[in-house]
Image (cartoon, rainbow, N blue to C red; front, side):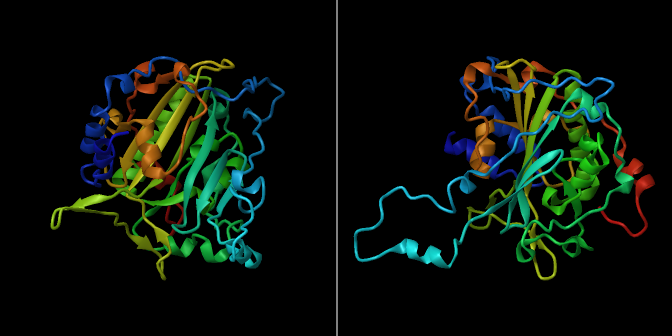
Length: 350
C-alpha cells in the first residue's frame, strides 16, 4: 500500500471520516479494485445443516491457541549467546509480554489489548440458521467485567459510568440470539469499546450490524472480525500528524477509539469456494443515516496497516471477490434508538 493511501485513512477525522475513507478507496489501483476473481477461502469444515433435532444451529467451533502459546513465552531466532552477556536471563523473573488475553466463547473469539483496555479484534460467525434462532433475549443479559483478564489490566464497569460513551458491542448481541448463554457472553467488557451513542452506536453502527446479518440471506456462511482503530490526524497548527484519543475512567483507564473497522468474509459454502471480502472503517462519531456504507469501504490492506493485524493471508487471490461488487452494499434504516428505550432498565447505561 502506498504512503498516500495510508495518509488518507489516517487523516480520517470523526467529522470527515466518510469523505476521506472514500478518497482512500478511490486511490486504489485498477488491479486492486478488480477483486471479482474468487478470493478468500473458508475453513475446510462443511456447514452443518440444522434439522428439527438440532438444538443449536451454530457450526462447531475449532479450538484456538494463540501462536505465542504454542512454544513457550518467547522464541529464539539465534543460538544461545556465546559472548559475555545473556539478555534472556531476565526472563527468569518473568516474561514482560505483550500478552493478548484470548477468550474463546460460544459465539465469538476475542483478543484483548491490556494497554488500551479494548479488544484488538473480535471474531464471529453467523449463518442463516444462527440468525433465525431465537433462544436468547438481551433483557436477561447484563454487562460484566471479564475476570479472565488480570484486574490491573481490566476494563471496569465504573470506567463507563457517566463517561458520555456507550459500552459498544464489537460482536453485537443480536448476532448471538440463538442461545441465552451465547448472548450473555457478548456482554463481557472484553467485547466492548467506548462508542459514541446517539448517531453512531444506537444508529448508523446498528444499521451496519443489521446489514451484516442480512448477508446471510445471500451467503450460507459469514465471518466477521471487528475492532478499534486509533488513527493519526494532521494538526493544522504545525502541519504534523498526531494520534489523540480520550481515556475514560477515574483514574483514566479505557482508551476511546477514533475509528472502528469490520472485515467481512462472505463464503459461498463450498469447500475451497469463493469468498466475497469487504473491509470498512467508520469514525467513532455521529454519521447521518443517509450516508452510503460504501463511502466507508477501504482495501483490506488499509485496515491491516492501520491495525497492525493481518487478514486473509492464506487465501489466494483467485478465490477472492469484492463484497460490494458481488452484492448490494446498502443499509436498511431502522429506528433502533427508539426501540431500545422500550428495553432500557432503570438507571442503566449501555
